[in-house]
Image (cartoon, rainbow over the protein chains, first blue to last red):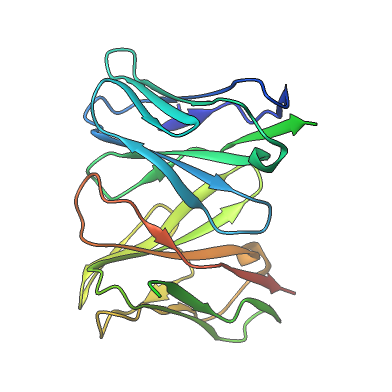
Length: 110
Length: 114
């Protein structure tokens, strides 16, 4: 079992819709969770981080964390074509700074 | 401007020819790390450093070396590169080694070993 798992996608949504990206992790001791966006050939860019159970909102982005079920999700409201990218979930397990999932490719159709 | 700078951005070389990829950050970060990214495998950590003269292996350290003689620099060394080291490499840094510290990434180095 991978430490951090994501569906590779592609996840295709129409412009203006809500995109929902999910991530599960195996280490129950994980405490910090990050979402990075990566455009093709570019470096990962931090979008959001969340430490506590519940929701955290930042603009069009909402991160949701459920430690009991060991999943974290990212919602993107009013999706735009410019949101088309690969979204990487990263978890801080304590052994070292971050363990990454392999990413979910999001396609927003105009 | 706060940044992580990697050089070179692209490199094509041959098997066995030693190479070094440099990484420098100007944010006075303690923690630095190298990742490689391959299709379907995501970002995998090669080596990391919690501070000057402190380095440790990540998930895929075979065939790589690093050093941390100065806080700002963390070079990645391939003593005898092989084709399976063809990959996209990222250097990253964060303020310190603690859970919850986001990492800042360099622009990446695309390395091809023939």
